[in-house]
Image 1: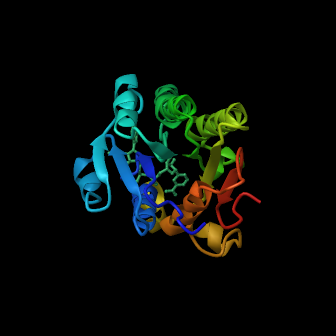
Image 2: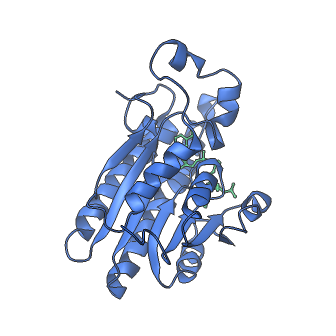
Length: 240
Ligand SMILES: NC(=O)c1ccc[n+]([C@@H]2O[C@H](COP(=O)([O-])OP(=O)(O)OC[C@H]3O[C@@H](n4cnc5c(N)ncnc54)[C@H](OP(=O)(O)O)[C@@H]3O)[C@@H](O)[C@H]2O)c1
């Protein structure tokens, strides 16, 4: 479309991290109105301030979610990046990791998406919502119970919301499911060589780049898009 995202108000929730900041940089090539939220790492978030309004919000808090949405009265797009790998090194930590994962990887993102969709419906504004899952929600990776199960639930909740929003309200809801990306929470593990066998074993040709995710998000934000209720795996074939 000729005007693309021009003038659109878009929130990148938890968008200060590796994948979110690349998306902010890509979207800021157009005249969009971006709001990037972070939870705790203010310094990292502030580095994006030339591109976006920056705000603190813990998505686990209903008050913070409301405040974040209040900052975008003409909201068109919401992309929820917030997440936690919920790594468990000791089996005794599993229960606590599962509880934390439920809050960060499922509850906060899903409630924010539903609250945003409710506001779009009430104001009669079409919109686009993108949630970020993981390859571990689509295929089985031993050791990923705490993380993957909540992300799989997130995928199902996104598709339910997409069905609830289809039709005249024209609010589209989709999921991007990254593979092993050379940014954000996987960066240190990649540097340590933990995932080298995915390449040497032939599953993928290279690790993903944050820009691969940014381009997928941009596609799903396109105002004239006909895509809703879909899960777009951006993983180089990892989950095939
Ligand atoms: N990188 C990968 O290879 C990869 C692969 C698959 C899926 N993913 C998914 O992609 C998304 C982005 O990951 P990333 O690699 O960019 O991670 P990241 O660099 O660690 O960024 C995570 C972001 O989430 C925010 N956050 C965490 N908990 C939050 C909460 N309760 N409320 C609000 N914000 C919260 C963080 O804010 P603060 O830093 O300020 O706390 C940060 O902005 C995540 O959902 C992750 O599960 C990543």
